Length: 594
Image (cartoon, rainbow, N blue to C red; front, side, top):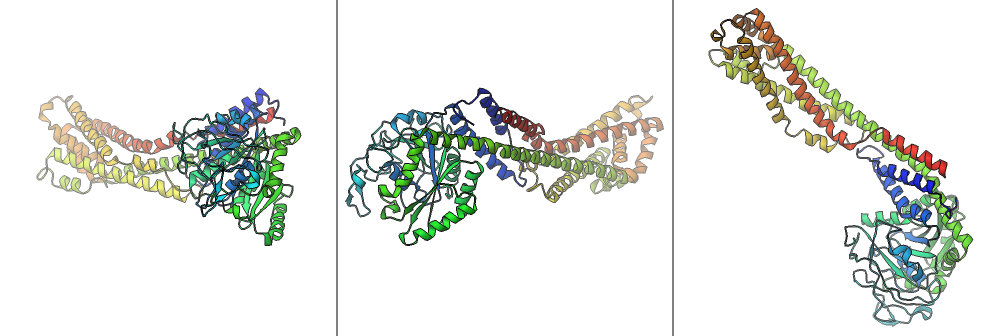
C-alpha cells in the first residue's frame, strides 16, 4: 500500500484495533501466557512507535535502527557512518545505555517531539567536544580520520548540556555541524535511564550534517543484553524502524539471537540490511561465504550484505572511527534510500505493508491466547465451585451421620445435665460445627489446587490472590456459627412464648436440645425425645423445621461466602469471552479498509 495517501478510515480502523489489543490481559500463568504478553507489548510498540507515525507522516525521514548482539560494534559503526563520536563505544557491556538517534539538522523537528517513539523521553544532546583530536588508549592524540575534525572520545552519557560536535569526511554526506538540543532534561546515567518526568527510558537526539536529509540512524541497545530493560528497549526500537540494520560479528553470526531478529524481519517483510563486522582478513572470504549460505537457506538471499574487516578501531574503547572505506558500501546504500524517491518509497511502503500484513497472523494469535485465558478462568472457577459444592454435601452427610457431635460436644452431651449446663452444651455444639466447616473449607481449597494442577493446560495453579482470600476463614466461620446459635435461641424463645405456660419451660434447656438434635444426626435421638417432652410434639416439630432452615442458611452463607471470596480474584481479572470477538471484529474492519 502507499503511505502517501493513508485513508482516514484506515487510521480509524487501526486505532480501534490498537485499543482492542491494549485491552487484552493475560494474567493467568498458563502455557503461552508469557509469550502472549510479549507479543502484545511488541505489537503495541510497533503500532505506536512506527505504524501510526509513518502512516500519518509519510514524508518523515526514514529511520534506520542499528541493532545487534553484545559487542557487535554497533556504536562504532554508527559513529563511523556519522563521522564523529555520537554514541559511546567501549569494552564495558552494556555500553549503549541511552539509545542515540542521529539525523540531519533540518530533520530534527521530526524526532525532537514524541511523534516517533512516544514512550521515550528526550534526553539532552552531548555538549560540544573540548578538543578537535581523538585520543588513543595510551593517551596520545590521534589525527582526525581522513581529515575529519574528530572528538576527544568523550561519551558524555551522564553530562547535562546541549549541542553537538562537528566533523567531516567520514560521514554519509559532507560536513557535520553543531545543532543545539531543545529536548527536555532526562537522567541518562545508567541502564534504563529515565526522564525527569518519570522512570521511563530516554532517547538522545543528535544532529549531524554528515547525515543526508530524509534519513536518521538510531543506535539501539544490545538485543541480548543481560540488563532486561535494555533488552526490551532494543526490541522496541527495532520494531520502530523503517530499515533494520542487523550487525553481527565473525564469531557470532550463527548465534540464535541475531537469527531470531532476522526471522522477525522476514516475517514482517521489513527492509533489512545486514553487516558482518570485525571479520579477520585471513578468513574474510570463508566467513562471508558461510554467512551468505545461512542467509540463502533462511530465504534471505536477497538481503543486502556488507562486510567490515577487523581493524584496530573496531575495539571501540576510545571513540575510534573506522576508515571511510570500511563503511563506504553501507553509507552509500543508506544515502541512496534517502536521496532516491523511488528507493525511499520502496523502503517505507515495504515495511508498512509487512507490518500490516503481519497483523493477519499476530492478531488471531493474540485472540487465541485471550480465549485460552478465558477458558482457563472458567475451568478454575468450575474447580472452585465443584470443590465447595462437594464440601457442603460432605458437611450435610456428616450432620446426618452425627459426625459433628464429637469431641468436647459429645463429652458434654453425655454428661448432660449432671456435668454440663445447657448453654455450655449449645456452645460446644457450635464449636464443633465451626471446626467441621473449617475442615470442609480447607479440604475444598486443597481439592481446588489439586484439580487445577491436574489440568495440564492450566499451568501454575490458582492465583496467589485466591490463597490470600482464604486468610481469616476460621474467624469468619466462627462468627457465622455463633450467629446461628443465637438464632436458635431466639427461635426457641419465640416458640415457647406461644405455649399456655411459657414460664414453666426452661428455654436454655430447649435450645440446647434443639442444637444437639440439629448437629447430632443419628446420635441425637435422645435429644429429640427430650425436646418433645419439654415443649410438646407440635412445638418440637415446628422448632426442628425452623432449626433445619437456620442450619441450611448457615451452611450456604458460610461455604458460599468462602467460595465467592475465592472467585472474586477471577472476576477482578475481567477475562471475558467478548474480548477476543471484539479483537477479531476490529481486524476484519481493518482488512476491508486495507
